[in-house]
Length: 639
Image (cartoon, rainbow, N blue to C red; front, side):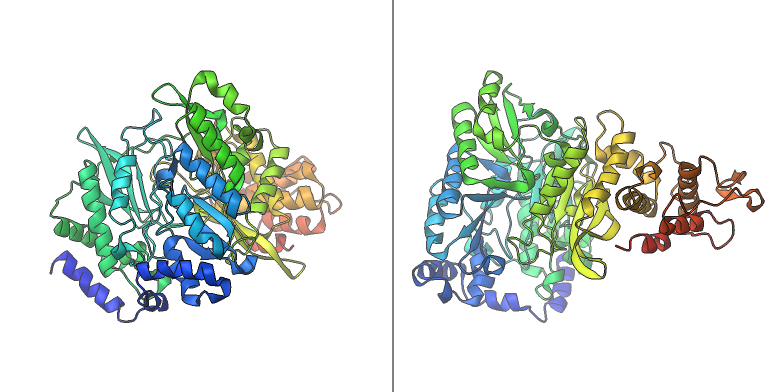
């Protein structure tokens, strides 16, 4: 049995029953669905069918936002291939946002634009205005090939080996505005391609990823498949030598996914689950069979460099001009600013480019013009260099504009970053703080140095907004997902928990060390339980009991090797020393105290009873000593 026949067999078994969305999609062709938009613009919001709101409008990037914004509010997702806009396009987007969308723009983590607060009667005009400058909203929602991302400085920066933008456009031409590709996939499909040593486009976390590599002295792309929010794509053991092979592989892959992907449970229909069912090796063999190409095995992946434009506010391009960076906190932008960015690019530069970090670059600025450009109002409102808590801040829309949001999201992110900026001066620091307001994860929280996921928490038994706190997301060397350290921290307390974390970074980081590097060098030497305990204990002792002198600090060279039982005793002994100036035991060997050599117990007048009892549990010399941090955290984090 061939690989494709195996896939067909699995597909037939899984697709015996179709989900409701598939049945709805069968009701209308894309062309028929688009024609209805004009009629609805004439008839008004109340005439729109539920099928159009739920499915067909999304073919063209139109999302009904009756909840939470009220009737006749639409969001429009605008496709910006590779995040690149000409000056004319940027000006037009700004004008449209101001004229029809309350002057509001979101920059998204797919390097594209979302316009909000649009009315049904204006939508045909808005679409025509955008199309007049070569911008489309086609296939930016539901079961479609979404905006393809690449490095925003593709073709410009010195860390680029292969220019990919023209290849990206050829990939897009395979499906964009083609009737048989509009809404016909089993589920959405995200793609990335990068020819850079630096990872500016979250290159490893898409359904299909083409990543700079070399093999036998040839520069090309290693393929990674099956990524999505919170999941890093897996090596496909394929090396593509040139653009021709990229296009053949890509088109064959998406045709197989369209033909045989699963259309039953929408929560299990992404490419990741297809691969899990049929096997990655089987899928690659099927692609080779169908394409008639025997692709080479993977080469050496070359994404190894960090990028620092946000620290310096600019980066020199290959032609000697500069790309100037503008920090757009949480991606909240406006039409006036976008129009001005386009005008600056038209007068002094070459274009506007959006980033995964929800920021933007204006490219092609001559060195002698930098001061003039930075004097424009755009850079008064969106700083060229900001604090590290804004430079790489990402947030999804949140409950204020998205019905799925559990927390407000963007406003929460801005408040926390403002708090941390006030508390810390870290001019050489880099911290990626990513917020998602719900488990859908549009803020890519699991890739942040610090990831924050909206949830419900409790204070005094009452439900409040809160966050799970995650650490350890990586962007370099094939990336890695963050892991949850603390769950259900009330939002009012979240800034203080992060303060305790950044305090350790500030005190123990090496010069110019990013948080990702700091995490790899030091935090990985501790268990997640130890990190959770340190943040929680320091929050309580410093913020709730106003005893900051008794805070706990990490060691530069921990000897506990991530063993929780050792860490518990080590932390307990440190707290005791902070309070009493001496060890609780006269003799301790390998974190095992001699009970016959015990000093006095901690005085209850120096620490609150809650903390005193907890530290006693950490320092017992018998079997009743706490062995895992979870049993301490349950008592400690009673808000």
